[in-house]
Length: 147
Image 1 (tube, rainbow, N blue to C red):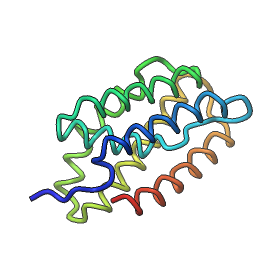
Image 2: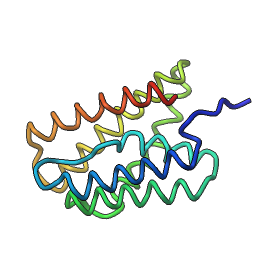
Image 3: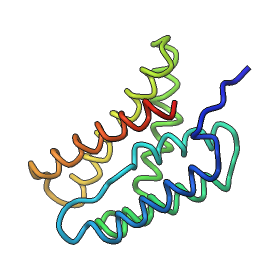
Image 4: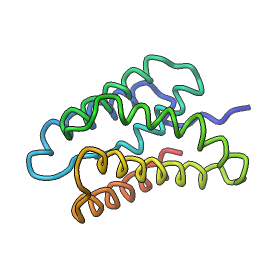
């Protein structure tokens, strides 16, 4: 039997989509805006697992807004999500027993992959690394409440 969380609710995915889009439109003027993409990845993975294509579409659109506002290649974060979901996540789920720890490690791997995507498009600066670390801790705090 599967445990349902708040992330399974389509309204939460729409609210996440709304905040990701707003932050990617208004915040990149002054600094790198990748707010809540770890949560967007978690909703992306859950929607793939449950075959909920409406939530999946919202998360692909939110990744597309982030990519367009940051100057990344279109669908690079979506392809990163598919790669992590199909290859890395099953290996971690088999290796570790704690489900919440696996979710946090997978989000960390997603942020490391995001840093790699930024490296392909531009040089990595110290500010980018600090912003990604801060956003990772924000996502950990929110995921701790939602999972």
